[in-house]
Amino acid sequence: MIDLKFLRENPDVVRASQKGRGEDVTIVDKVLASDDAKRVAITEFEQLRAQQNVLSKSVGAASGDEKVALLANSKELAEKVKAADAKRAELEAVALSHAMVISNILDPEVPIGGEEDFVVIEHVGTPRDFSSAGFVPKDHVELGKLLGAIDTERGAKVSGSRSYYLTGVGALLEFALVNYAISSATKAGFIPVIPPVLVKPAAMEGTGFLGQAAENVYHLEKDDYYLVGTSEVPLAAFHMDEVLDVAKLPLRYAGYSSCFRREAGSYGKDTRGIIRVHQFDKVEMFSFCKPEEAKQEHQRLLQWEKDFLNAMEIPYRVIDVASGDLGSSANRKFDIEAWIPTQDAYREVTSTSNCTEFQGRRLNIRYKDSDGTKAIATLNGTLVAIPRMIVAILENHQNADGTVNVPAALQPFLGMTRFELV
Image (cartoon, rainbow, N blue to C red; front, side, top):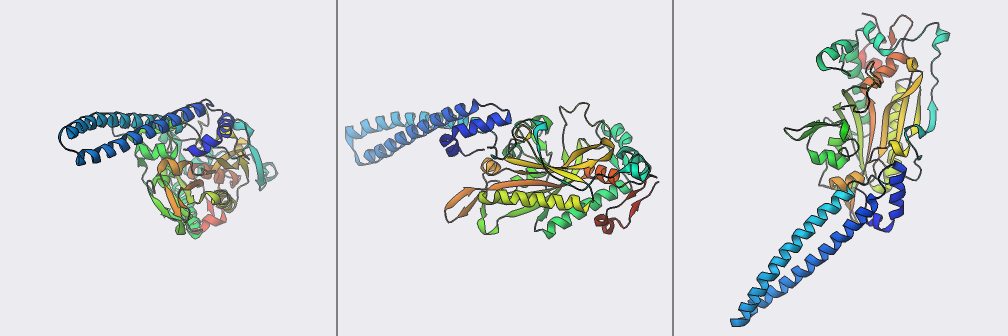
C-alpha cells in the first residue's frame, strides 16, 4: 500500500504512476475522498467520546435530580458515540479498500509502455554459433527424451497440459541447481528457508497477489487457502505484524519451494516443453531493508542473479521492465533473459523487484530506529527457476550427438561432466 501522506501531498505523481502502468487514474480521487471522509468521521467520534468522558465525571459528582438528568444525557450520548464509532469503522474500511487498489509508485527511471517497451541494459556472453559446429541444435524436449531427463507425455497423462516429470539426470540436475543456489546464497549471507506453499488470504493480499495477478492463483475455496506462485509470498509474510531490529537489517532469506500458477491468459503460448508450466520449483531471494537502502539492495540482488547465470555459462541479457509489465507491488523490476538457441530468442529466467515499502505497509512490517517506527522495504529476486534453467542449460551446452556438457560449477554437485544418452 502506498503512503497516504505522500498521496495527499503528491496526487499528481500518483496519477502519473497509475497512467504509466495503464491502470485506473480515477482511483486516486476516490482514495482522497474516502480518506477525507474517514478523517472527518474519526474526528467526530473522538469529539463525542471526549464529551462522554467529561459527562461521566459529572455524573459521578452529581446527586438527586441533577444526576438523573445527567444519566439520561449520558445514555443519549452513548448511543451517539456508538453510532459514530460504527460510521468511523465503516469509512475506515472503505478508505482502506480503495487505497489497496493503487499500485506501487513507479521509479522515475522505469521505461513507460507495454510489455515490448523494455530497455536492454546489457548483453553478457555471445550466443553459440551452431552452424560453425556443423549441426542444428535440438530443443530441450528432444534432448530430454534422448537423455531420459524430461517426460512431458506422461506428465500430461497424469496431470494434464503444462505438466512434466523430471527423471534420471533431469532430476539430478534440479538437485544440483538447488544445491548450488542455496550454497551460493548462504555464502552471500542469506538464511536458507523452506517455507509453506499453502498460505492464508492475508499473506496473498499483503504481497499484492490478489489484485491483477489473481487470475493465475490457485485458490482452495473449501479451506480458503492459496497455493503460492512464488515463495516471495510466504517469505514476505514471515515477519507479518512484527517490528524488526534495525541492527539486524538487511535481513535476507533464500527460500526453496514448489510454485503453482494457473497460466491463465497464456493459451497457445509455450505449449511445447517445460518453459511455461503449472508447477515448478524455485529458489527465491528475499530482503527486508531500510527504505533508503532499497535501490542499492536491488542492484545487489541483480548481481547475485548475474553471478548465477555466469556460473551456468549461458549468454543472457538484462532488461529494465516497462511500466505496463510490472506487478502491482514493484516499483522497478529487472529481468534476466537467457539465450534459447532453438527459439533464436532471449527468454526470461530470473527477475528481481524493488517493492519499496509497499508490501511492508500491507503486511504491517516495521522497524524502529532513533527517529521512530517506520515501514520496512522489501525486495525479491529469483536465483533459479528450475525448468527454464534446465531448458537453457540443455540447449546451450548440447553436442551434435545429443549429449550435453555439464557447466563446471555444477560438476561437483553431479559428479559428472556430461549427460550421456540413455
